[in-house]
Image 1 (tube, helix red, strand yellow):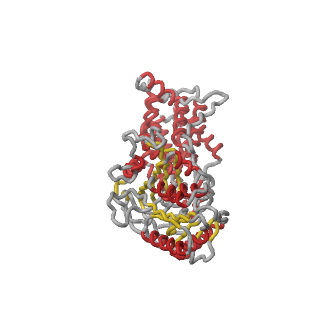
Image 2 (cartoon, one colour):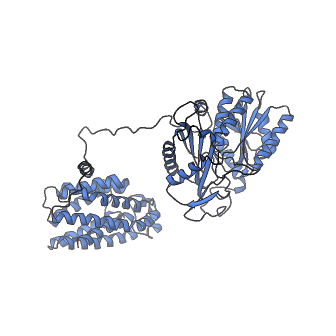
Image 3 (cartoon, helix red, strand yellow):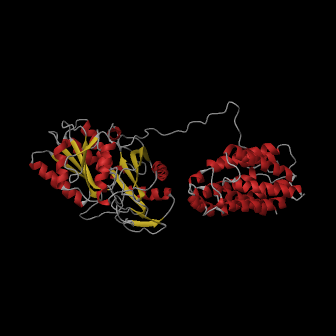
Length: 600
């Protein structure tokens, strides 16, 4: 496990709450802290129904992040994964409750039900009007579930939102409680994880999930999942989660069962409207969450459900668990209005209310730059023909060279990734392998018989597929090479060498690096020098490529002893860089060797 950025693990919750209230002007801590850990709104309005929720800490931003106008008036916080005390809940009720009364919204865990319930009964003895709604939205386990019932998960947040909007609108306690109960019957959640959490102060995860396996249907306290499955693309994982949530045999989301197979909403529309929440369980990054959200949206549309709102982020976590949950909330127009109502809660996000349509790419006033490979593909597809083979021997050799370079880059992917993980951002292997696969796909459509046009086509493919710094540098390389080779004889090795040298010069000019700076140039420059000597001695192209590959490999290896002056490696300590050669130089040596082998 990685280092935890805490002081004393035993004071993590109190220090976290102190930091939270200092960061958000609309909330304060209730006096009595740290024994009574309650976050309340800075300005309590006792002329409306108050909303109180809470539970164990470790689920941040829940629940303190949802304190604000239009949502909670108070969040009662326990220690990590531990229910808050009766005294803390009662203190919260007393602080926020006026004549209209107070609604407690509680996740279905035994400790929370007991402590919030006992606090509610004591508050009633004091003359306060208090109701309690328990949310149980877990869809992982089939009924019957016994006394414990379904767990309360991220669907609780939709209940907060609907009840909070009703309270803000001035509804009575009975109506707000009715709104909360209706919303709790309209939500369903399922989680998945590939790694469990670690309790603050612990060196190891709470338990081990075997590599290559996923736990489906686990809770937010690290309880084991309902079942395990093999790791799979997220679209398959999301599909399994949604299939379980809407499973009619389990019957947890009967609100969606309207006129199957074509579901109709309560408004009479063709597709039942749902809000979707894709919630990180702690360590899952936004990139993965948005990919999962896209998959969820596509699955829902394919199953006659209309995802009118999609919420993506960290809402109810489980410390640093690697996983996410998906929640559905059935939403007719009335409930959607509650969900869309304004709120000052810092953790409730603003989401798109319409389908996003791509904006057209602006055209250049100088005329569009045509991608020759894309144009060729479109032309052949239109005619239903296969691409024609090269007309010349040079064209055939060029095709072999490109395929050889691509093959060597794919073979080098793991080596490049390992090296770049130490001295860069870890993407060098994947980036070059992506470019290699694109070259393999495109090569048949390239103008292989014309060196200058071929260089431009290779540059376009590299630009489109690789991206990042490497993609830009190689695009510059091949653009300059094309300019140098234009009009020169394709059969002369000097033509190809001129293009190679021009590409290196442009790389250096625009990239800002020179020989000895521990970059790709430290492989390319020796290769160009060796090839130049071979060609001057009347050697053929195959021999020139072979000696160039030798020189490139030697130059790449030498970068271990160099101090980086450009690129991300320039920020890495020298002792770390000595452990591996520069990944960019290693990649260049790999593709040059691939060319040499292919045309030998």
